[in-house]
Image 1 (spheres, helix red, strand yellow):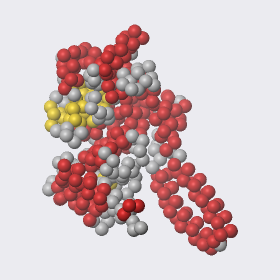
Image 2 (tube, one colour):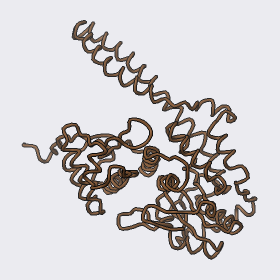
Image 3 (cartoon, rainbow, N blue to C red):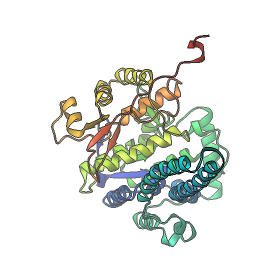
Length: 411
């Protein structure tokens, strides 16, 4: 298994690929086109796939909540329609009692003009997947049926009660000694595993690797330090040395961790499965959202906020990203074409830009965690697409004036 920076090459026939639970659950969260690309790519390496029993256990534990979450999102357009109806009634009452019918009518028309466009856009993003049907009738869940076929005969046996209890006890002992993986979840006690889920996945993977005799790639969205070696920028490099050593000692094979987007990028480059730049970027966005937690992502950028981000990008070795953001900000439209970006980078016209905005998202998360940026900072550079395939342009945010603090105002 060869490592080349963020990329890697693998002989898929001689590799066992383990997808963690969130990678599978995010198939539900992905846009329709991306989901299909992901499933086709996985079908292309089906013989290499293995699902530890713990992944199956967690998939079924969380599947319904993910389906309910997506079903609720499908109701956004209807919620906006209800909001519009209620607002129109309120404006009518306002016209009758306060401002007069004519001004109220003007406000209503302005509101309708704006919200109808928003409702139309929200309605146009409705997926073809029927979340409610999948909830009530799993046999009509097309994602589940594809996964069932994909993993037929490739799921590990679940532990019996005695073996399960012994594994949880072993995990607890390891956590006290901060032996990876999973010690950062040691506080979780909401399930029978008592926070030992990551260790159970790891132990079951080692047991399978011992029988299969193939190097292991674990595909994950978890970038915590109880799995990863992190560089000076707190970005993941590869599996912790302890994990690589344990896999070698226990199973006699190599082990590697790969983020989902990097895995898909490698699949697109080493197999016949077409994984588009857009799909990799969308998966990257899901990874970023998972890492960011439940905080909403939105809001505006000030010059000071942008300067802080660009300084961090330069510190992290991404001067090129800082330059592209600055040129986007300076652009009258806030947009740079793909050709503009490639020209700034000095890359050929057919070069790929897969994952180009990932270091920007990571630097933004770092600054939010440090309290330098507010938790609602919007993306400082967003790839835009006219369809499947490559990004056709990149958009930068419009800067707003920084509000003076109370201490800086005249008294």
